[in-house]
Length: 99
Image 1 (cartoon, rainbow, N blue to C red):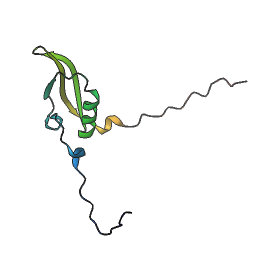
Image 2: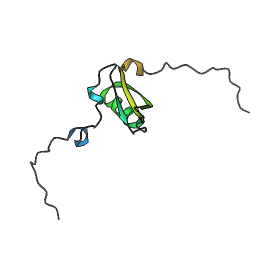
Image 3: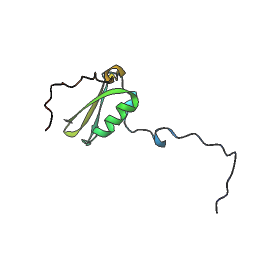
Image 4: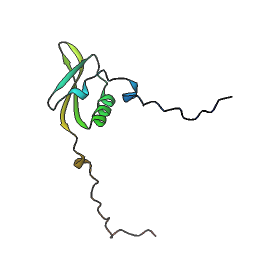
């Protein structure tokens, strides 16, 4: 059986799921980059960070100092105007009817 209690304050939710990113996405200024050695599959991590921070990040898998890895650049702030709804175009009315 569980005891029902009233008036217990809800604690603050931890930020970032309670953990800090090991990558410095939030510290990048436009034009800055960093290299992650021995890590070549980072697309979803980079995409999620860009969305969360509302910035545009670009990456390239490459080799540096003889080690494969991924270099990530911050290239811009995301512009909400770029994500506007596309203009709707009416379909042509001269379609053949089915018989």
